[in-house]
Image (cartoon, rainbow, N blue to C red; front, top):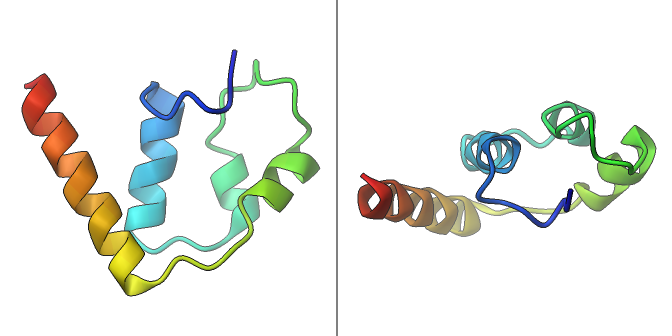
Length: 71
């Protein structure tokens, strides 16, 4: 299973949470499927960064568009 699968259920949950403003890497890492072999520490490090208001807006719009296309 790949962490890069952002279209899966855990990936979508993580993207939604990011778009809503969550910045706590530990909380985001907790959304990952437990079958992922990466450690929680490694995931938290990968999820640490800065996501500004504009990036969150783009993420929300992209997710809404994807939902429309899938609908």
